[in-house]
Length: 118
Image 1: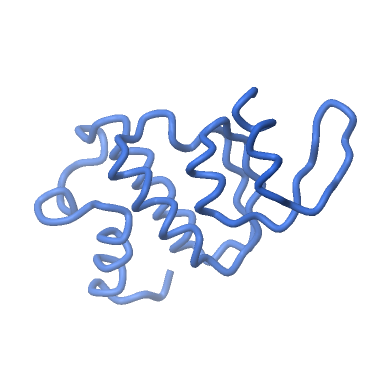
Image 2 (image 1 turned 30 degrees about the horizontal axis):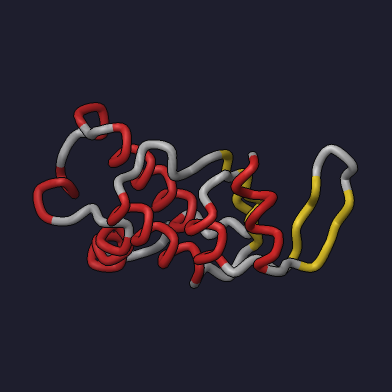
C-alpha cells in the first residue's frame, strides 16, 4: 500500500483493532474483528469504490460506531446494502437506489423507514 507501519497501525486503530490484536493471526480473530480487518484492508488499498453487503452483521455496537466513523470520512464511493438504520444514517448517503424498481433518489432521512423494512 505504500503506507508506513505507523500509518497502518493508525488505520487499524480507527477500526478498533489495537494492541496485541494488530499482531494476532487473522485466522484467530472473531467474526467481528475479521470484518473490521477486511474493511480496513479495503480502505488501505486506496480503492475508490466499496461494495458492502450487511457489513455490521458481526459487529458489536461500539465496533459498528467505529466502522461507521471511519467509513464516513472515506473519500470514495460506497454501495451499501443494509438494514441497520443507525449505520446508514452515520454514513450520510447522497443517493439511494430503491429496489425492486431501480429508482435512484436523493437521500433523505425519510428513507430510513424503508431501510428498517429490509
